[in-house]
Length: 598
Image (cartoon, rainbow, N blue to C red; front, side, top):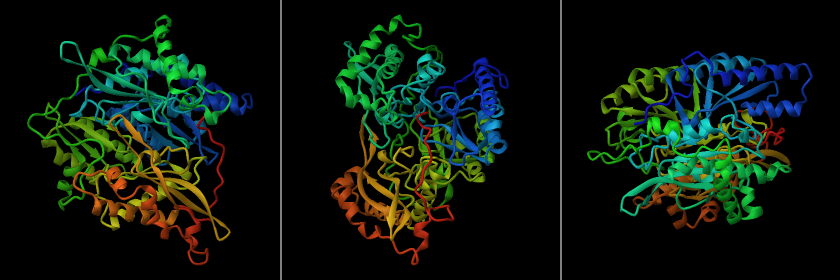
């Protein structure tokens, strides 16, 4: 198991000079903005590049904290709990890219918040805007029995190289990098601007050489694109120049005139994958002349090592990726949790265990509780791209005590990453671009599955986005929903488009196919019916994608749900015209988006 990597190299409480400089500049420009000496558009671009995003509630800000590849130390967890209590509304939100977000923060308090974060080596720098965003990675890296390489130090090296990098600041659009340690692709490399997956190739002497397969120009949003393979194999010493070459190519040729077509994925459409690939490889060949060239094995990789965890000879490895357990037969709370929240199979005999963060939310008290467990048990901890928390480096003897302590803080629910574990973006609760209350729908779906006895079904994942931008990654899940405005009986009403059959894995990606549109208040029932069909009709070992194909595809399954695409009159069911967690009539109006920093 790779030891937790210290991001700062400084003692706790001492700010990295670079972080201090960032905060000093933020304070200076904030004062100018409040004095009317800095134009709105210039301030907005600067604010976003520092991880501060405007909320639907104009008087408040969302603060996004970078958590590279999800790794956190105890003092950082404690600080996140302090931020939640002192500056926000008592809790933080884990995102699908392993950030932690805090909402309802007053603009004037942000410099103090940044200093608190900086004291434990955390930063908001380049967490938003047209920058290189948080470097994401498989949360089991270094603790996965199937990995080819531990990508943790590689993700760390990438984070360090591009933070404040001259090419990473004012790109045509945002730029996302994800790492996976094996073809299972738990790190979700296949729909990002750069996706890195550890692979092997044979040497002439018959041994195997570990390295990487690099994918580029993927993306979600309203028009999802699968990432393209750059080359069959990228040696370890070539990885960093390869990533920088892709970034530079995007900076050179990305569309700076139309933000709607500015992501790197659009270059595949305008110049073709072959030409784009050729330009990247040419850029890499000549990158040696640049002062930012970072060839060879990065120092952090040399220091910490990237050897795989290995497979135990005494324990059957727990499958990773989408769980396949149909239902939990255990009734004992600990046994239920242990049977689906624990991953075994690492050669050194350690195990990993999930803590369930409902809707991705972690309270101040829960942050502190997680920190205490991590410190006292001597564990690693990472946040996952399905908005949970995983402890790594456990022994079998520690599992009962960990479960007891998680239960005490409300994070011991069995089935993190099973059907009950619905993923959602923040939605219209805070986001300017969201059409619907995706968090409220996630809660409703979870409750509907629990009531139907289907929350323990494995092999099916549900993701929700409140608009087409896919922050909830609805395109890539077995059952996906995106928020839309519907019209019925002369009134606006909240609705969702259902997609079926999305999945990521084995260096492949399939985006979900449209099934039908539904009133928001019928989505929970529709989900129950699909999950119930899957659970009752699937053959042994059959995944959702195979079942869906055998069932006739998304359109056929959607047709069987057509009776749910009905709006009662406002007099019969006024609740159909009010969104979840709202009290007044639904409105599909959205604000000005800041995602692109435009």
